[in-house]
Amino acid sequence: MIIDKDFAISKIDERLYGSFIEHLGRAVYGGIFEPGHPSADERGYRKDVLNLIRKLRVPIIRYPGGNFVSGYDWKDGVGPLELRPRRLELAWRTVEPNLFGLNEFADWSKAAGSDVMWAINLGTHGVEEARQIVEYANHPSGSYWSDLRVSHGYKDPHNIKTWCLGNEMDGPWQIGHKTAAEYGRVAQESAKVMKWVDPTIELVACGSSGKFMTTYPEWEATVLDHTYEHVEYLSLHTYYGNHENDTPTFLGRSLEMEDFIRSVAATCDYIKAKKRSSKTMYLSFDEWNVWFHSNDADKQIAPWQIAPPQLEDVYTMEDALVVGCLLIAMLKHSDRVRMACLAQLVNVIAPIMTENGGDAWAQTIFYPFMHASVFGRGTALVPLVQSPKYDTKAITDIPYLESIAVYNEEAGEATIFAVNRDLNESLPFEADLRSFGNCQVIEHLVLEHADLKATNTARNPDNVAPHARGNAQADGSKVSSVLGKASWNVIRVK
Ligand code: AHR
Image 1 (cartoon, rainbow, N blue to C red):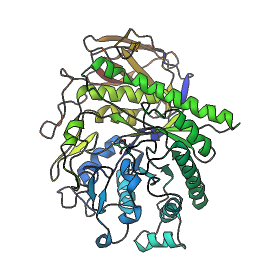
Image 2: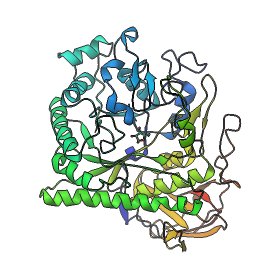
Image 3: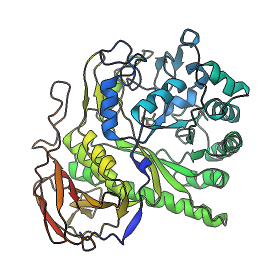
Image 4: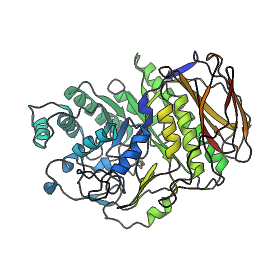
């Protein structure tokens, strides 16, 4: 690998390390909010969960959905608790008690050290709600909706800067599913009035729910035809699974993610050219993760419960490797992917799990995400990598070594993130940091486990956890190591 400060991809937008909380399963109730829990503060926010989230340094959190938002009336979740309605929630077939809403989430996000990325409902609602909620959240006072917020005890506006124009509107499973043209129009008009209320906000239009959609990428082109001059970002969503227990292919899925990013960026640039625009459309990968373990269990959950245990994937060591590869994929494209949300944050396909009334712990995928978020700030450097490759039935030319370096100028440090995809052999690794002069290895963190299916549980929370016994060594400007089979590596150099 050659690592050179002069070969910069981009300064990384810290919002690449965002996450997501949806009113789904036990993400909110029993996850971040559980009045009466031994660790809950006076507002009901679980401090054990907040402590874990702070370790992840999540700069922005998307809320309140997801599929949930397309049937959600945000007004149900503000004002006196005793007046808030219980509603049938159609996306996930639960009962939503509305004990937690916009103001609580704004407070909670502050406690978590995060900004809010708010998704508006463009399923059952439209332009009118779009302008009302921006006025409620961001206008100082002196108008109906801003004064309503003040009357709810929030004198200062929340100043939410980032807004999603709906969620997965291309999906037939979405409440109020739309064609690309229908969505494009309502997104454009909503964007217009939202920015009339607050011209400082940034907006994300819905791209495809995944590369698998038959409407992709025509959806992107049509939506951007309507919204190009009104929004700053287009969204991408993707989840990967290992249903067939084909781990070599599973580990190669990050190549598909890269292909998805490249093709969505190309579609944006096609519309840019068509419109003779000088504006570049950036990407918000605002849902990504591994999701498949809980699929069968979810089919057994009876409908119309409050906060049932939905989408509770228990992640393995190999899932952590995939998450590491996906993070590297996004860093490689950080010139276009400015924001991303690990979906989700607590209990629901999440790095953090809780027991109702009990413990909170870190899942395997917590660690690569934490390492990337903490050490992956600065400038992403072009990964000039030579690696042997392998083929599977589904994907060809998968490099055994997946790697990128991030240069943090302020700290004068470079961090190399590297996955050895080889399940059977260790991999000799050599990096030439030719522009760094004499290097010193600060630390070499490793996540590995003899059993690729190993997990962390409430009773065994540290079964899969990183150690600092990696063997990276510096000799002049060369750093070398032997990367253990199926391992995630973080080599910090100065
Ligand atoms: O993150 C879980 C769900 O996945 C979200 O609600 C939806 O947007 C996507 O399909």
